[in-house]
View (cartoon, rainbow, N blue to C red):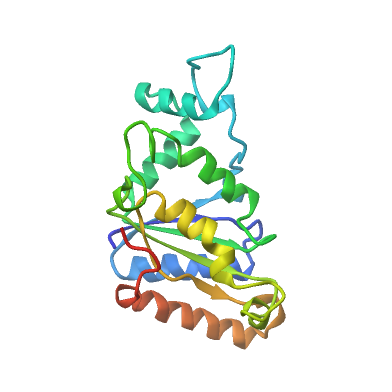
Length: 222
């Protein structure tokens, strides 16, 4: 894992979610990897995919987002902010989504990052395959996330449901769809409701997770 890209989606730099991001940066850098972080809130990243994604439109009279994405990829017409994130994605060997679970999914800013950056023509479509024949078969990805509810709420008998089901649209429908090998997620349950000592322990557990990342059995493998 030479090149690591972390897409971080939390508005508070002092949050435990941000602490997990910082832990990953420190660990990978200590192993000699180059790490880039897209801190979406700090960047003021616009999550809304629209005409502003393109420097020129193929069909100004009727806007169809996916077709404009294909045309932009083929003609180098993506806006600078989208192109910069695409360049980072192409560069990385390992992709990490670092986020709090909000309403059983990604924060809007991170979902919008996927909408805009996982563009048709660039990641899939226009002759490119998906899943086992996906564009990014050379990349590994995983989720690092925090929850509001306790672990018991996410078991098979929990009110919130099974986390494998909750994370399916992200792990399967985004990362594996693009051809990536997807590792098991790292989840810290309800960090706001544990002690400082317990949070420190969770950071140590995360470091151990990262140290043993090469021995993890993938959830999906192209």
